[in-house]
Length: 114
Length: 115
Image (cartoon, rainbow over all chains, first blue to last red; front, side, top):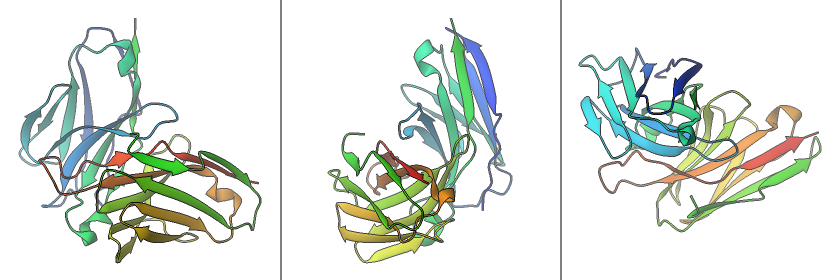
């Protein structure tokens, strides 16, 4: 299983850029890296997905180095409403066999302070 | 996501009882998943189904069974509930369309307490 490691918690202030790094040393060739956001008592919500290099969407950027053994979620100018747990998920759902390897890490609790 | 619903939202039961958690989706997705989440931990995959005739065990399937009654419905059963199955259970769906084909859409969760 592609085990992931993330910092347990991070604090930031409103308006700052936040970078959360996830380590996944034994990522497989077919694995994608997906980040989710979860608020208390809610299901996780997709943020961004990537395979290599850099991916950007309207809410975040994802940086993946060439060896793909880590990835960094970047949240620009965070606000109080970004306070949540952020999960890095490594795997893919393309094939039935590979989906069994879907592994959520313990997540990073991001607290945005005023 | 309102397109993925779970019933019940909360359930308290006793050890040894049979419990069924239900998941329905209107997204038209073929793929459905059941996860459990324990306090302070990430989600762990219990079972998943890629279509009505395809059921697969996830990381922690012992003590659970599932039924895919239709494309839109995926039920999780605890045949004889035990206290360490107390957790938050999430259903999710996905499909292969679009660029984010690994994106899963999660339901609101079912909080299960086994006394």
